[in-house]
Length: 310
Image (cartoon, rainbow, N blue to C red; front, side, top):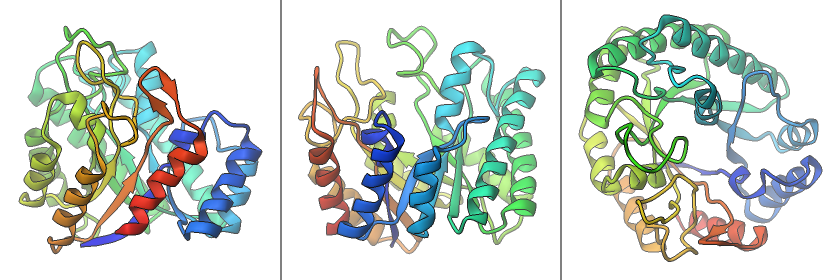
């Protein structure tokens, strides 16, 4: 069943001045009643004061994603990540994640609920099993820290694209992850066997990143729903079409080449509603449409129309 609606408005408004971003959050809450948002946090870079003030005034809930952290740091150090087989790089990623947890604690003091902290593996730099072992160790440590500092926040892992290193689409438009879905399920099953059963680590799906990976999103969602690992949420977006395949740019269903349509949304929502698990459904779409860019108002309106139809 669908438990909540989440909007990643930042994908459309993130380049606007902070005051304008804050105005959009207030407008989305006032006009559409949406107060749960996906937001990226970067280590050492707090949210703008204006955005924090707006979220606090709205008593908003957040799904905090660290995927942008791994993509940014991964451009400087390809070994960076929670599944890194290089211990120094793994510890660096853990330290950054801990810094973000501290930001989440500060937001909670303002009355902003952080419902999920969503991490991912980091890039492939070795064989699968060593990556899985490193990821297991990182998740155990991070979950322990999160449970002590922010017990109401659930840890989640986002499934991202794991194309081979020699694929023509460059990082970070592709190739962000070291582990495919079956190994993520196996790893998280082990993690959840060694953590609190009341706070299992879940998987979160981003439709567009599955497209980048060449997967069939509905099939992957069903695979997770049938697995021992809970599905925490599904963030819906498309991807950018190119001659070499899809790129991770969150194009909306308004782009006919994005690989994501309103019908896809409805099929996904129906699958989630028919299942007993409580899963959030969200959208995160940029204003991109091929080589063009849509007005922010059009992009957000199209997303909220779909979300409100659930």
